[in-house]
Length: 266
Image (cartoon, rainbow, N blue to C red; front, top):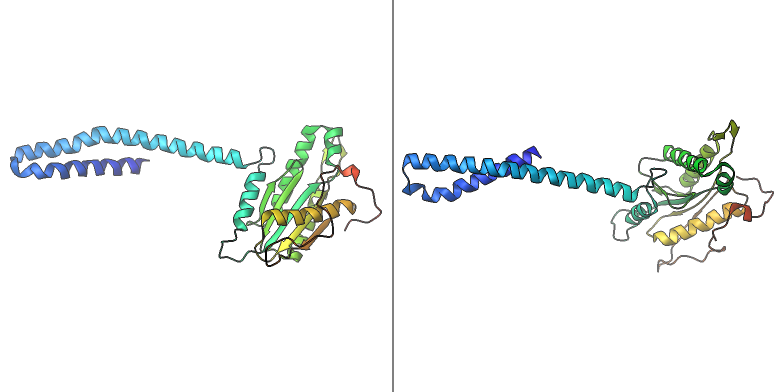
């Protein structure tokens, strides 16, 4: 801000001197000295305060814009990117026009039996559980990974460059870490668990199609007993269409609508 003011003032002084210099040959030495002093004093006295005020206001606007941008793209509860920000960042990574290789994995993390936490413990405790889960996931991701809250108790994770083994390992690590959270109410431990569905890709694919494939694998994890991970590979056709899946797109259901099975979660 100060540098801008100084630079602007110097420019105004130089401009004034340049314009007046065409008349210097008609002036005496005393008149030239007087003109030079005026050319220096007038821009300094007028331009400097105005430039400083303008720079200050522009700085305030930039700060306000940055703060509004953070508010608009951050989930207020968990302080991680919201659905719009997560989707935007994922689509930028998946940009068809990008010259860099496009490979990685997309995971969807959904809290199990979360409705019972809100119903029995209250929404305040439910909010605390979501914040704790978000913090655990952040701690178990690499610096370049992207985490966002994409639904009430649903999170999305983009793992650039991660193959199916790395994605499965990361998902299992997060599932285990969330299961280890010490979430207690009135001295009573309340278990937290998540189901995770994911898909890996080795070439460009649209975010919507990747999300649909990961969502279908999340359906399998839920239907298979919950508290487990299902990650598969995504293969595109030459046209870029999604290959047919052997299971329907997941309908939003409460966890207690899934039949209980004897399958041991993996």
